[in-house]
Image (cartoon, helix red, strand yellow):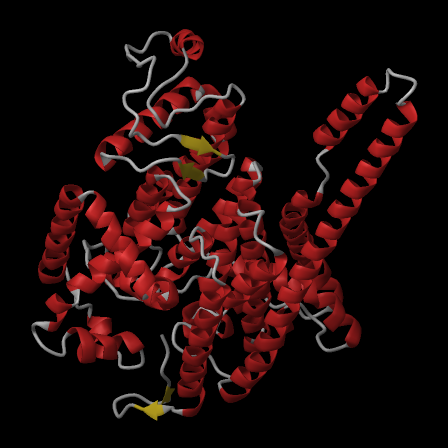
Length: 598
């Protein structure tokens, strides 16, 4: 059905327009939650001040001090709010300044659908014309991208209709317009990243937070697919929105964005689980914080232990009432899940068991509160499980070419690619010295761990390295050349790379361990494995979301490292866009122009 009149398209437009307005409003509402003043602190300050004004001889001086303090506090909050708004505005403007001109050039040189766009663009245009029954069997993902496209086109439709550019809704669903949606989503991604960074690390100044955000938006794989009608940018935006909502305690809205993320790409159910798990742990810890409980030394107070037994109806757990030893880690818990170890552990394995034990007790003690808060996530998991059983597979179409596999070497690939992208952080003398000192402190532990990691690496590259037919036959992707010219340049090469893989992951664990608990790091690692290992095809696009999580939780305080990373990303981006636009080639067995891409 094709809409041909303004009147017929009005109803179609209204629903999409309202959906996009509500979505954008909530995203910016989440961002602005941090600007609200702390009313509890302000009221407490006034109450304390009122108690102190009982002495009439000093009442005037104290009133003046209180007034001056309140004015200074209000001025500080106002300036901080202005700085945050200016930071967001500058980020949005900069991202638009580089994305719009390149998008125009991109569409001028490549006006027609390319690669996977030949499936996505016609499907989105069918949705724009009201045809929701037709489906291309080659599309593997759910229609979340096309629903977002409907909302985006509905958002710009009034301007186009008023200007007389388009008389119907369907006329706007051109290749240019649909591709431009990713430019808008790239801006949203940058704002979400900035808000998450400011929420988790409020001590970071605005300039550094802005620099970090702008550098990450230039991450080559994310940057390149901003200009094609693919699912990657939309998927990243939905996952970041889900994470930000969870961090701010808006669990229902977080689940809504989680549902959207799954509709865009099914594997995002793993990141839904990751966000729900880490959020549930932080939520239980925040409940315990009210009672000033500290679990890092495997101890609880006698009073709290009694309460725990009463709440848990006697679980048979025997908790120590005093410290096991002075060498254990004591942990200061924050609502965001960060921690600061006060001393190095003499037994890393025992420390991990202790941490897991403490978290388990907390979750069990507040199991009903956690279940109620995270009920929407449980509903989503049940719905997704039902879909997989009904569909018979995780993917929607082309099931034969996208069967799940045990591609274990994907994890080493991701570790090396991510560490290389953050080369100033991971591949420098200072980081190598830090890892060496960690080895010297607990030689036996790291010797065993390193041996196991090397053994796992050699086994994975030898037995669990899959050469997908698409990888071997499609010379348009850079992975084709990396596979042939690097990994398989010599039969020994894939084994020689194993120590580099192991170093990359050890460095990643070390960086994450500076700001995250061990449980969090393990959840991140297994989430990466759940997303990447079943994928038989090496696609660097699959690394985007885990890379964003990695950067968000890597405490990089050196601005020069960010600056060098930015230069590194710009060089790679210039190379890839020049190769794509200005170095086309042709196949003898197939008509059309071919281009290089990730």
